[in-house]
Amino acid sequence: MKRHIRNLTILLFYFPFQFFAALTFAQMYELHTTQAGLFQAIQTNGVAVADYNNDGFLDIYFVTRAPSTSNPFISGGANLLYKNNGDGTFTEVAEQAGVQGIDGRSVEPNLAENYGAAWGDFDNDGDVDLYLTNKGVDELYENLGDGTFRNITHSARMDSIIRESTSAAWFDYDNDGLLDLYVCAYGKYGVVPSSANVLYHNLGNGTFVDVAAKAGVADPGFTYTTMIFDANQDGWQDVYCVNDFGANHFYLNLGNGTFREATKEFGLENEGHGMGATLGDYNNDGLLDLYLTNIADDPVEEWNPLFKQVQAGKFVDVSRQVGTQTAGWGWGVEFLDFDLDGFLDIYAVNGFYGVQWHNYLYYNNGDGTFSDMSQQSGVDSESEARGLCVADVNDDGRLDLIVANWREVAHLYLNMTRGGHYLKVNLIGTRSNRDARGALVIAEADNKSYLRSNDGIDFLGQSKTPVHFGLGDSKLIHKLVVIWPTGEKQEFMNLPADQTLTIQEEKGIVTAVENHSPGAPRAFRLLPSYPNPLRQFTRIRFQLARDSHARIEVYDILGKRVATVADQFFAAGQHTLLWSPAQQGAGNLPAGIYFIRYTNDKYVEQQKIVVLK
Image (tube, rainbow, N blue to C red; front, side, top):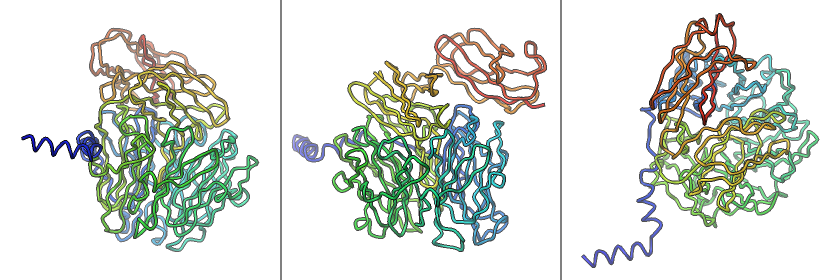
């Protein structure tokens, strides 16, 4: 017996991290694709997440490469929009919402391919819109605010170019408060007339004009991803193109509507087969770093660079020193703090035409290095993956993983870790673009500082999710700083951890929803009302973690109260209230947008509903 104990002691002495990591993180993620109802998401390229119907739950959009409904021998079938039901399940509503996208029957067969999706509120109306990239003609869908969209590609003047578009990124390059759009073009395979990247300038009247050549960012490479960030901290968003079969290019925003190429000057040179990119401050030094994925037959020969920003505007590749240079045949990649310890980890997905590469999870050791935790994580699938999103889809404060697989069903991994505290921040721009793309958020807790960027950019996608912080053991944020795209700063002091804040530019914190412990049900949750839109009635649903008094009211778009549905004490649990626009106290309300507002002594939360006639 003593000999066995001695042998174990020796193992622990030489391999302490590997041993405890295997014990601690063995059950860190669980696959929930089938339970969540995502079984239709087969053969997908890009994936993007946003709360398209403003019910407080993140929804998932998959771009499919499944066979066309009209021709099973070509790809380009209907895309999928999964509405989050708020109970751990999703319902596919793309056809109902009007965002199935181009089907192979509507274009020439050699152009039938769907690639990516980018969510962005281009008209600043509070409803996130959707841009789809295709081989052929891209599509812009305007969110009508009632759960449906309309295709406005032609009226927006975005249908004049036929190209093979891959990723797209919404950002405000000229700081006029309107989201512009950068579209990556590939064009190496197939017959497409244009392969130069496009910069659509938002004219503010529902139309766009391509200014890429004039602005100096019509990159001719085979671009898969473009990372948008302010590399030199001058208040203007810069552009970094990640290119396949050639050199990446960095374009510095000069602040006058033009850019200049400055790749070597900033130390961002990388020539290979670039695919994905992710932005984050992995060493918590207050400077944003950049990690890229490449594809190569020999991943040792062509590694994935981790560009550490050593000073403002100066980057150095440290991937070999920190242990992240190899990630197989990489595609989508994200920084994330999966265990809420305050340090950003890296997840990269893999695969290529039947060759088995597993997905990689690099655990941040907190000392500037990473350890490969792929095998212990439960997310090292060998399915041939492409797109990746990181988002808290079940609203428990922990980041889940959504992987788009090229041949098989997509994977939804729910985060099952325990321990640590978090903060989530939703941003609403007023002088800035409403999505606050390009904003920075800094959280200070227990003499530590954490920096996050609000960009949402993924490989073949762009998501709109809250800015997320892992805070380790800290239960109080001493100071929270928001640096808006306009350069204005807002500071907030002594905020409790484990909550979701909504911060509006100039106004401040407008809502705060508390969750006392990650993984536990939060004190209050306003569930999606249904039907919504409604004609005769709707069911207002909410959930309480403990007994409490609550007031449920309905307000019109001008802020006038039109009905009080309930003002009473409720027991813990889920409740459903039936409300009709014609009932006493509401009168015959005209058609339009209204808001259900929940209020008690600690919380105020509201949800949009649409009344039809």
